[in-house]
Image 1: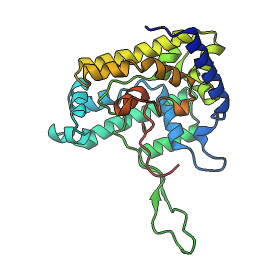
Image 2: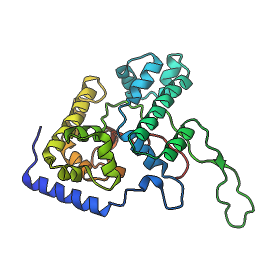
Image 3: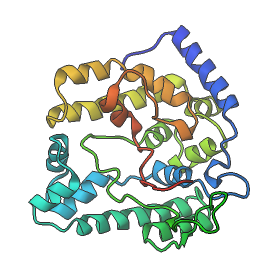
Image 4: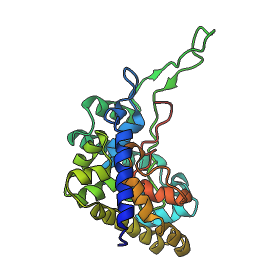
Length: 284
């Protein structure tokens, strides 16, 4: 794996420390504003961080096909719904398989101490479409709201992707000799991956190498499966190191987002757990 220079390492550590200090108020980000509604996106992010669920594999099994076959179909431009229709499978069958997987994720996140019981209960209700509808705020001058709107909505098909992805917290935690849940808890307290590595006496290079290899391997598998052209993959490969350094410096709420110069494909590759993993509709 390509090594980075001492100068780049020092710069990366500086960015990590400054970024961590500037954005250290992430401890309660999943709880939303004080006295306000929960931050569904933040809670969903935490639930998914250490999950080993491969949504594409879950959907593929429900569709009676291999994960590679489904990825190829999606890469060709077909939607999951269209693939299901072509194979004569009710899309509800796929959605229910994914719902069960996500419910199991919520249970695991609760067992790992990443979310509170109240958050788990709310997310399960959301997954099961059991949350009541609430009226929106009435505009001034109107006696009643025009309609009732749902608190949130789960997109059960989110996370079924035409790319091979990784979970960066799982990879980084293994490289540092800790559990993924421990790393996420540190992130919830405002630390970046780089800061956690420093506090544990783990060489930053060790984590960089592990993450870079994981992303490179996923990219190589994309090429092998015909999901991306070799020339395009080479362009993405050249950006992996810089983006891994950026990823390591970010608090978990920003992990994998807004990566430069990679376009739509690069963003999919580096998300690992997409920000819409729970596909929440409405406002939070």
